[in-house]
Image (cartoon, rainbow, N blue to C red; front, side, top):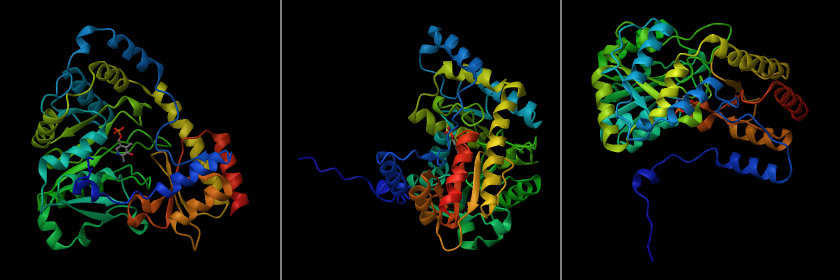
Length: 389
Ligand SMILES: *Cc1c(COP(=O)(O)O)cnc(C)c1O
């Protein structure tokens, strides 16, 4: 009989820290508990109708049924470059060499270490953070170095604390603002610091900007590409998933340094065949979407944020009020670690939230709530928590 043994790169994967919470959630549901799920980082609202219409039209056309071009439709890449100019004032991105289509930004984030690092090299990534940064690093055979995001530093990494022997071997760095899971945002000073640090140590910067369009009070987050020298230092990953409620469509992009874009592109031409062209055409429509469609989506998240933020602070929890992303990052009550608190919420209140330690050790002591349920559900969650705590 076949004896299946997985490769060391799978054996080396970090333990899945959400397994226990997932199991408890399923058990609660099986017992008939009406679980309020605040653990899901996936918009609950539908994709705007005009984008769906655009896909329908594009899907009818036979030229879209064939293999797409590897680097993406020129018209999609051009739409990305135009969007960067309109939204961020970043002019002159060359759609041919400085923009690449991705099958969702996760795909690009997971693959980029394969192009630039190997055994002996180090990848720096912020922690707590998106689990794909360490996993992509591990699959490429390189060593990861988590840069802690601490409340005391406004959840920005402290480059001065990175040891010299790590810096010598560091080739690539992942950062992410607006940040998942902490909801922190970054200013231009920080991006300037990133560029001078990366330039000094010859490190490729990969900025993950998946949440740049999910913001509140009209305070628009910055793009890394707005910083002088960004395009000479690295790339930015972008995604249509969170902005346009398109997580299932799998469409993202990378923009920036042409040699970095080319390296990632070479990995991709050897592994995948690009994004369904009809989806890219719908993506062009999405990128032209105005505030008449996006503002109501932001307002919906803002109302939910206020309901949950006010509710949780009213219960005495310490919560960071987010200016962007659809997450609330809250401190666990004294004496409870993040898994114990998540377990208590599930068992005593029928609420599912994500323990901070699941995003990396520096996330211990915090819990993440996603704003992906409506206000009445949110208010019920707060009520239930009030009884449980
Ligand atoms: C959701 C998310 C992504 C990627 O989403 P895609 O759907 O793959 O484009 C990337 N980074 C962070 C931090 C995310 O939360």
